[in-house]
Image (cartoon, rainbow, N blue to C red; front, side, top):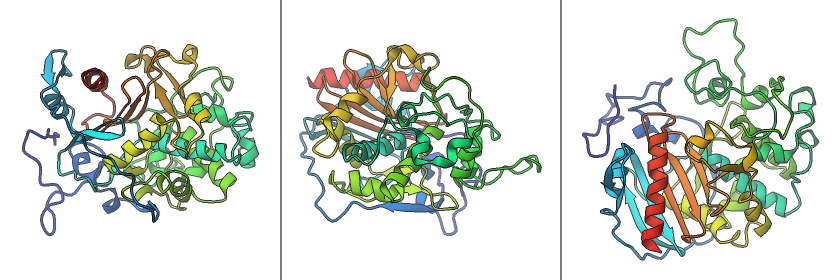
Length: 401
């Protein structure tokens, strides 16, 4: 079954009583099911709350500008409007905040301001923000070894890796990130995290990890020396999350609530998906509203907002471009990766939080702007969609400046 754009007829997924179209357990994150499921994770998977706390939400004043007709590049290389591009790229929500005020906000595909939307790997940047807060409080040391916090990993390939290596995804640990292969390491993470059942018809002799930490304990192969090269591996964020839990003496959802979500004035409580032993999926299981993702971006734009150390923000914008290569240069030809954020180039040092199927937070100091795009693409990765979106963000920034 194919997916649908917002301008096309919306499939009646999970409509009716009982519903006739129910996402298959193995394919809830694939098209067309993800057009519904990314906004309804709590109906599919167990989750843990990230409480917003008892304080008032941070006010986001409105100075709205109609950007629907702004000329931008289409995904096919021609010209279109911003509204047209948002339709082309299966957008669920899109928000632009400049100088702390909302200038453009759009919802599609049934999404509302209160909808919690799955962030996929934007969760990595959320987890890292909480790590930055712990580092600022002296509870976590990026120069310490991973095994200082997790001595069980002395028998794995993480022996000798520093926490900073994990933050920057530069450990030499082998982890296969092929999304379409159920036996790949990332395919096994689908099972260990509780996102998917063991694939039907799989080899009965294959030993599937029962939870995420068990999978981490099984990573025994070292590909290269720690620190030599950036290589995107989702398991690094899981290791980071477990280190944070040991250092703080709390589970990750509580850490994110205490250090980020409540202090920043979130409008709604968020959630993490959890595995069989209650561990939050640090690398991809976070769910929140469009505006609250923007509030997270504003912490970075505003030099930490009194919540994160300014030194953490500066470090996050300062990456080693020499160890950043293909295929990551396809969409960020002058990019780098630091502290679980993508750096656009060494001049603007703007940053992105990015997740598969089209999730993005963009923080740009030159434009004094934060933008958030939540989507449900038909594909895990689509360089044309990513590049067109990045170009559109610059078109918006130039138009507002």
